Length: 299
Image (cartoon, rainbow, N blue to C red):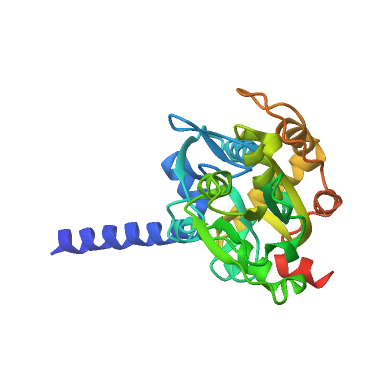
């Protein structure tokens, strides 16, 4: 009987420890010696090189965060990579599969009900990419056209809500990821691709004929992009925020911007040529985790 009671006690204690770690990412990664990073296959800020290798602006920021976590925890961590999509990224953070989502996720009020966000690393502008010879120069030219975007993103909804889109009728087609959406434009199955400016610029730069495409029209929306983490885990959020703030202060973020957006990127040595915007400069000067709705209110 005593053995049964002891076994039950141990089981309860183990379950309690597991429950505690569910909302204590620092304890979880310290105990396991590993951290799982959510990465993207074809985002402008995180993408694959093939063979399980990933890279990008947000990937490098997260690599620095993990180094800082190793210092604070006093141990080397194994980084495991979990590819995520626009559709499954929030659930995979929620259920504990992903500890640190390093893709290109907009911080908005809807998502903030289910997950938390670190301080903003990049303020994105939603734009329209078209073929250079299309004759499309603004929202009004999309009437009667086919517009592509990526499943699980908010870009077309943003387009429809834009006040300049009143009375415009267009057909929507969806790519399973950003590369697939760009292919819809490239192959002529779509007349325009609506998405984050960095993603559009990255896909154009990596295409077979970059000069055949251009980014046109109005800025449809301004959105803060941030690294996503589990909700109600203040210790882990503080650790991630502190690392990002340190990277801003010591100039690492500025160096990464230059590396990824202003310099030729190996192996193809393509240069995206995306200047640091005033909105991103302000986000770095005044670190915050404000959602997209706060930015919209300032317009």
